[in-house]
Image (cartoon, rainbow, N blue to C red; front, side, top):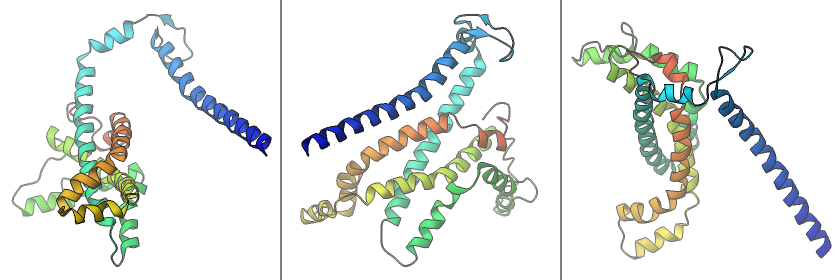
Length: 244
């Protein structure tokens, strides 16, 4: 029996090493290849490559367009992540309760995350159309005129932030909801015995227990938001005047 367990442990170790090696291979090889390509100057993948060393990096660092794009990415990523986390926690707390129709509401909440980016972009373009857009008409009825959603730099940035928040908040909500359901109820009961209010329970029980998931979400959303391209291109194409 001991020999069988030892053999099984060795098999698991080798299986783990093999899978880890495959993952590292699939990740590291493209990274190394990209670094190698960055040290050459070439018009295409099939043309002759000329060694330029760090010239490409120096050119990028001296390019004002790069710094503007970096700043726009920081603004976009910071606002979207902050709003997604804030709304995700609120929705998760709401869905972590028992009430009639809960499964239906949970299904509706996750729906935006399931929609293709093209569909989301078309929906926002329709709602923000300068003539027949629903939000444009509402703004006019409120006495705000007809906003130039895609011509004003600040409004254009707000549009892509809101569209991204609307799309990705369900993912954050489900992640926080899963974390909430792992918190032992005994912690809340002990807090109640100590006279803690609901607000105190939230800050001293819920938030500390959600912290590991919060860190994971911030990491993942940072990676995904800072390389976001599709929704920006579909809605604003980087305009107006490279504002987005």
